[in-house]
Length: 128
View 1 (cartoon, helix red, strand yellow):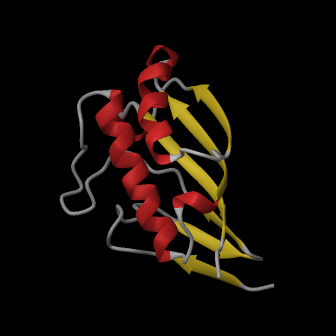
View 2 (view 1 turned 60 degrees about the horizontal axis):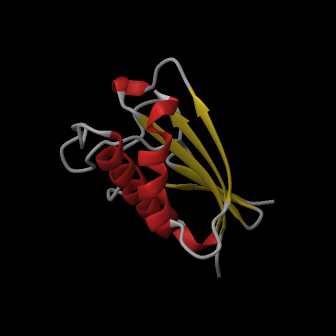
């Protein structure tokens, strides 16, 4: 089995001992993405809709660097600071995952890195 570490400048750099994603055995496993602007490193967006959009754009960049895409995602996990933001997050999420959406788990957590409102990780098919 071959394991390939994925890194792209089009998404926030890993700030610890982890990779943006790992490609292995035909799958891409992404690390959780938060609403950081990859160019400035600053949090992007003050509400959950804006943050979700930035998160999914970051996720898309990581997947593309791995030779995959949003359309090949099979499972996501969404971490919300407040489950009351579910409908607002879900409306933006639906823009990215129209048609045949992946399986998903959504959980409320006590705190996220840099006190953001949402974090999303994904598992996708590696593509061809």
